[in-house]
Image (cartoon, rainbow, N blue to C red):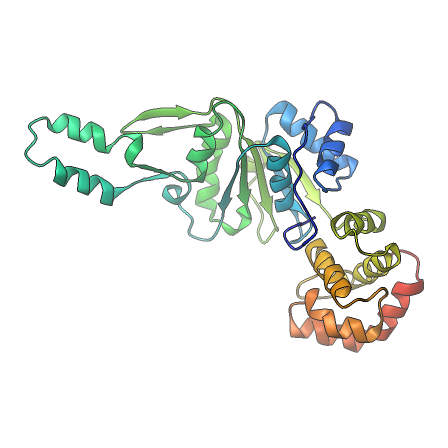
Length: 313
């Protein structure tokens, strides 16, 4: 479930309680995140066993949002590593601030103690922390939440690099020595399954497939995130989305699109779905012209009528 699109969504401070599956569910609910028991159980075990949580599923089902909500509930820092093709260890771990080092060397020209200059420029003052190092350093007293987002977008070489980090939660910087996390950060990896992730990485994690929500859960998400939405409209939207997700789209709409759509319809003062309103707002849920044409060809009016009357899809 995503909240970034939900204007009425708000983060709340809570007394995070992860002592049981039920308390995990309640803690997430206090952050407006509706989690089913399977997700709550997996998250409970991940925090209890201090193992990374690997979430896989279609885009827009709430994988990334879980990390944001978790950081808010724990009142800790969310550190995000956005993966992409070509991502290397330097961009993920640390870099030296070469410009600052050169400036320092220039200012110290003429100094006889070259060893001191060398120690100075290879100290933490000249180190640029990237997400992985930052997660280790910031987890000294309280574990940070490390989100490794869309790991399937990175190269296999980067996956191999992650193995050591996720096993030992420490790194060695040749000029400074070994840096180890005081406490293990809470690590969440996400994948949209654009490619398979290697078994070695999965073995270090607890795995969960995050599917589209059930009818009841999606209605509850709408009513929680967009509280001004009438239940009748929320149910119609959910039925329509359920039908749409069974169609052969280039990009199926996720929960993020559901919330966008609910807000758009409310902004237009719509209390129920009707064909004209759906046509005017279809861009909230479908982002490709071919998908929009397919809806029209398959009978948009029929989908709206079914959303009014059919049992849940």
